[in-house]
Length: 406
Image (cartoon, rainbow, N blue to C red; front, side, top):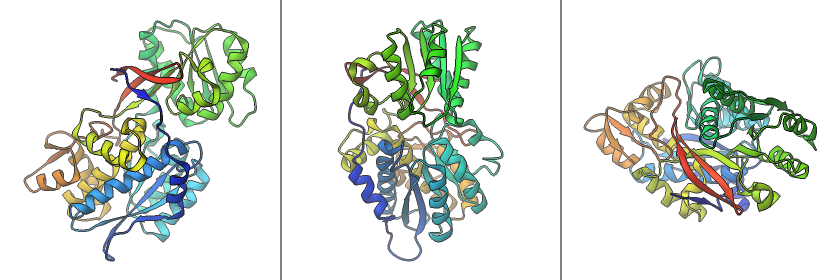
């Protein structure tokens, strides 16, 4: 089935309004459980952050409407990471030290999550994030087991890139990676998976951020005569690289992560430059009942289909599964709550699709919350494995041709 992702971007005005009002869900009484929403409302992640934040709010409202978790209502305190590790650390310190939040949800970029997780570890509270860096799965970052990833790892993204590369018949891939944990993780994951298939990578380049031109790095890659270039990149650098590539006139295909190859990229470069680019992103659990509830909430909040922002589906699940764990634990003590997170999200219990349904089912025994973003089965590292969509840019639109399962 073809799915078009045209207008997934949240309104800037709405995002600014959220930032201006840090406490955006106020529960009645002093006994509320405070949860921090720390999303990329501005910066590179801005196109996703407003919707992510609003879905934490919407899910908290659903919890409160069902009587709260563990007998207490949820209060959301929101801050903006600015998609910047330094800004995120300051915001996280405020949430932890001033607002006394008992969990932080919604960090997006790997650099931000890697900067924030030492703070949440020290505070003994969970960090639920959408970041891909493999380092977030293991010590030292996740030494206390308090990090929970709702996005695929960069390594799994790389494996998806390799599956798509093989399916599309490419033989001579090259890679270009932004010099950070996410960018390098994507291309290293691809290289490992591609070599396991018996393939070779004809050239690999790591480039520094914030350059006015990437022509020298690009020309090094093009000199190897690849038939496809796989990137670990962001939208700003991708825009420059593709513009400079188009000027060379050298034919080559591109496989690019979805956060860099999106409607903003098409708007910046036009349909001719972006035609045929393969954009790879996680896909939500679109057949699930939880997705239907999320989709309705997203359309109400953002005026767009929930399929337009997979990260917002993740933050909806973060709040829902956290509340279910609080309910199962019967306390807001985070050590007890964290111990229940896998129990309420993984198999062997009654399948549920909402907090209200799960709260009722917990009275009879174990539950298995099947999420809006994925089936939400946490492994020993706190990671999940979403499916991936291969979106082809055709006539200025992103059309999903198929789904890749890893």
